[in-house]
Image 1: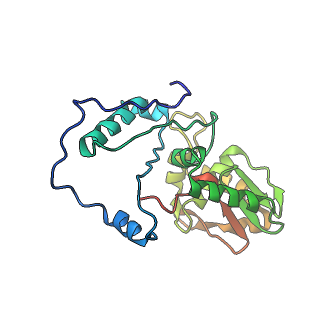
Image 2: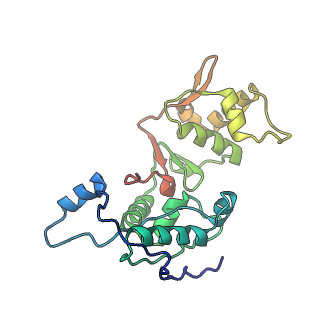
Length: 239
């Protein structure tokens, strides 16, 4: 796909139909939001951010231009007077984070921009005491120093952290973190070895990874543990 924005195309006459006299009511959430606005302001439209790269679109049997065209045709049918503009959010290859968050930030959506700015200001001061698990940067800080975690060790810790408070069985860890065709796929008991190495690098904070006898492992957050999710954090306004 070209790196240029998708050009707006006016709806054809065939795509434009007479609007039915009985219009569906606006969603309650939009009506409530409009009611809260000052009298001098009124809704003029909306933005729909879609997180989907070309590869995922192809796997679904569609493409980004095809989706844009389908949305435009739907709008032309429901609201012939609506004006539309579509643009593609570009990001460097290998950019981390959820597609939707990357899109919102690339298009300078105010909420995403504000959260990114706040996170950047927070990053200027590193925690000197405790453990910081930085999901977005794939690193662990222990008492302000970067710990030498291997890729697999970080994946193991991250898997437990993202399921905080839940006991994860060894079999689940194996199936989630090792591909079936991997020659080095460990047995369930070998997971214990990986956890021991992980705990050794956590040092005096090793008990944040708890053993649940006969079942598996669980991440327990302490007061001296900080989790940074970055752009991967689920958006609070997602619906």
